[in-house]
Image (tube, rainbow, N blue to C red; front, side, top):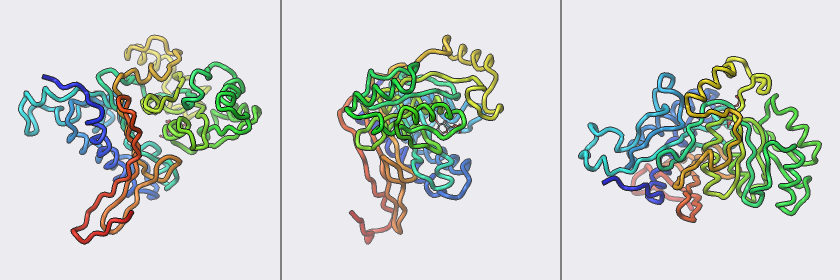
Length: 353
Ligand code: VTB
């Protein structure tokens, strides 16, 4: 009989998966080779993933099967992935829970390559169909924490949203700090935020960790606004479900609006056809947290690669390494910040507090 997904049980398995990816990526920090950093994170994540007792299916991964050798969309992962390999009987395989997986083994490849803050390894999981199979295109997002839930509207003027957030937080607009990816496409957004009087933290990369920070009080970040990746939007939504935050989002495929290299954005008609194939009939739909992560049982795990607002980066020392992670799920009211010492040496190794 197939077991149902027990989030508490699998959470620590997914922690191991993120830790492995973060350690591998952190080893390459500052080497200036973002592709290599990503590659080692993917390999490490993939390897540990197969030790997780589940029948996993990648819904957000490294790309389509023909462009990604590992963690491609549709790839089956976990101990139950292949009935013919491994040491388990078919009966045991069938008992593993069915899990959908969204991964970003190295969110912020550039950040890792230059040793900048906020690179993380991330994984979200849910029961089948609990995470939107979002295309790898751009997405406009606005993310806020629990206090500002219900106050934002992605179609409203920036100033109105900031006013509403400030009111909910019991402060002035001038006291807000908004995170925005530093990109030419955000020139107007940045100007609008400045005109409204709020403060801004421009990000080189990594709007996923910024979105999580916006949902956690005490980080001194009150919102994330602007256009980043759609897959990152789904992962953010998974985290927000556990943190009671809110995201509103909409896919963006207009080359004029994106102001990125034309090779990065396929023609609009092509994208719309592709979306239709994926079951997305209204390309202008506004997604909320539950549309992006509809799952009833969601697990979210992230490990810091480089230091960040929320998580410390991997530290290496003579006899091992130390990682800092965030692990949470929608079932239990536990938000775990986990500090792990990975001991490598023998019985004389000294463990520091
Ligand atoms: C976005 C953002 C990510 O890369 O995908 C961005 O969501 C890519 O945007 O967090 P550009 O094409 O404009 O560079 C990240 O910042 C890092 O992967």
